[in-house]
Image (cartoon, rainbow, N blue to C red; front, side, top):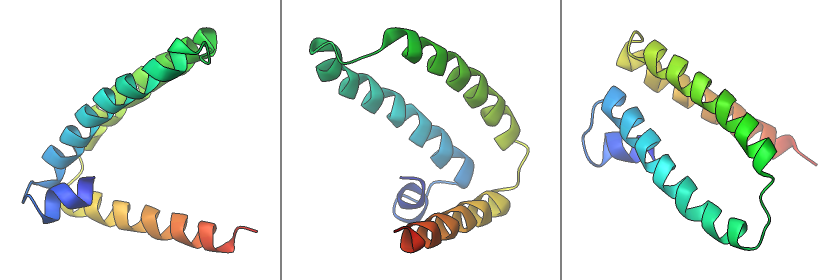
Length: 91
C-alpha cells in the first residue's frame, strides 16, 4: 500500500506509512468478524499478540519520525527484495 500511496497519490513517505497503518486497523477488524462468528479465534493468544503489537507499533511510529524519508524508501525496497529472493528460493 505504501508504494501506491507515494507513487500514485503523491504522499510523502511518512504520511503514507501512517495512512497504511490506519487502513490496516480497519481491515483487521473487518476480517476478524467472520472468524469470531464461527468461534475460530483464540482470544487469549489474540490478546497477547495485541499487547506486543501495540507496544511494537507505538515504538515503531515514534522511531519512524526520526528516519529521513529517503531511508524509509530504501529500507522498504531492501526488505521487498529480500522477501522476493526468499520466496523464490523456497521449496
